[in-house]
Amino acid sequence: MIELCDALSAELTAGRTPEDALADAVASLSPAVATPLRATLASHDLPESLYELSHRPGAQGLRLLAACWNIGVERGAAFVPVIDGLAQGLRDAHDHHEQIKAQLAGTHATARLLAVLPCLGLAMSWSLGADPLRFLFTTLPGLACFLLALLLDAAGILWTTRIAAKAENP
Image 1 (spheres, rainbow, N blue to C red):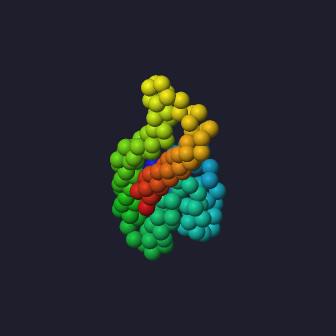
Image 2: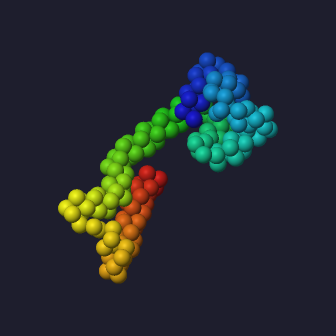
Image 3: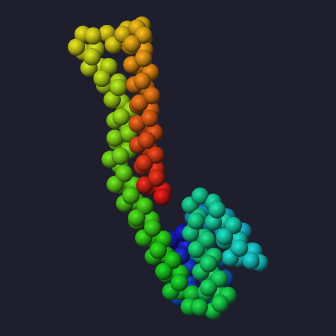
C-alpha cells in the first residue's frame, strides 16, 4: 500500500490524470500485488471496487485510498497532498506495528519458556536421582499433580498468548 501511494503520488505530481496515474502506479508493483488491482482499474465505480478489495488480508489501506479517491477526484480537492498524507499515515502505522512486535518479543519468549519449564523440572529431578515419571503416572497424587500441571501450564500459555495478541492487534 505504501509503495502504491508513493507511486501514485509521483505520477500525479508529474501531471498525469488520476486514472492514468493509478494504472501506472499499479504497473510498478510486484505481480502478486498488482494482479487483483488490475481488475479494479477496469471498474466503472473505482472507489467501490477498491473498498471491496480492501477486505483482503494486507489490503486494508485500499479502503482509505478509496476515500481519498472520492475526496480528490470526485470532489475536486487537491489529490497529491491527500495521497502523500495517506502514505505517511500508512508508514507511521506500519512502524508502530513493528515497534509493538519488537516490544512483545519478551512476552513471546516468556510464553515459550513457560511451555518448556515443566520439562526442565522433570529433567532436574531425574538428575537428582528421582524417578518423576513413575511417580507421575503410577500414583494417584502423581497423576493429580501431572494433570494440574498440564492445566496450569496450558492456561498460562493461553493467557500470555492472548495478552500479546490483544496488544499486537487492539
